[in-house]
Image (cartoon, rainbow, N blue to C red; front, top):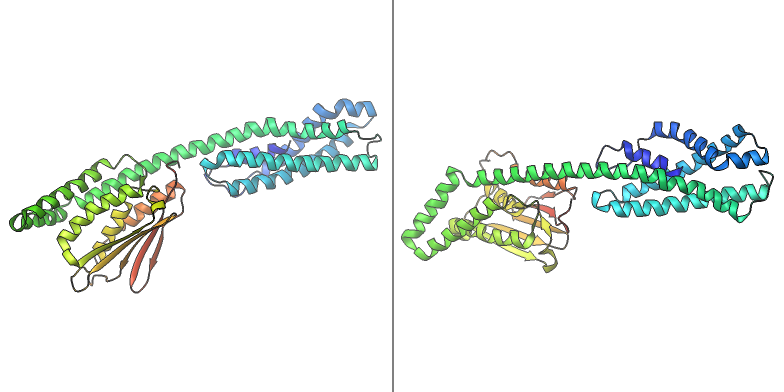
Length: 359
């Protein structure tokens, strides 16, 4: 009886996150139908025995069904706002069941007590009458609610599969975009020019530079399979990537790390840090007299990439590929969004660190 409204709303849910139930017609049709079926199945013989008229009995059943329906509808609205993600489905089901059973028992017990005290039906209520009324309501909880909650769960699972496919596609596209940004004539020219200069001046540094360059490309080429990567792995990659930058810019660029141990095993989309550093390098002046300072700070919840702001006088054309790709990934993950903070002296991007690889 009660869960019919809840499950019907779930069937109509076509979005991954739901804050309200679009169940107008299910309530209009469902409440009278549930009242009719429950009256026939559970109370028809009892009514005949005591000489009650079916129509009058049905009207009382209709009022009771409407009251139970609306009360339990509020429970489902609350639990679906509280537990929105696919990974919280079990918690949502458990707390929805507990809440709806509790509401049903309280309301049905109160109605039965009213009938008992007022002698509404012309006979005294015994314990079995209280239990029978609760049994009738809870039966619909288990049968109808179970069926439609299963439909709701299936739809959320299908949405998650679609989101995962979109996320993988976005991840691959991001990797391709990042690789395109790196493997271009300008980048290759700068890298090879730096390597050539080092080979004439310092063979050892040239070998180190070549080794770090190979690590960067190896990571870029192989890191297109995982949706998420742990922070420690990303920081190791940043070490190689930043070595190329310091070899090129020398003392004109600096990197500071402030990483809490608790954050190292948390997850984020691959190449997030590299894209943020690259964004800082692209749009800011890098000179020995005005060095660019990039700071990476990570706690148990977020990682922030911050740089001192000294924008280039001639602005480079940009389509914001890096920031938009990062934002798109977090959106598909259903995670908190990135936060961008800009002041007169600094530019910072804060991205959430995730605890699980599951969407």
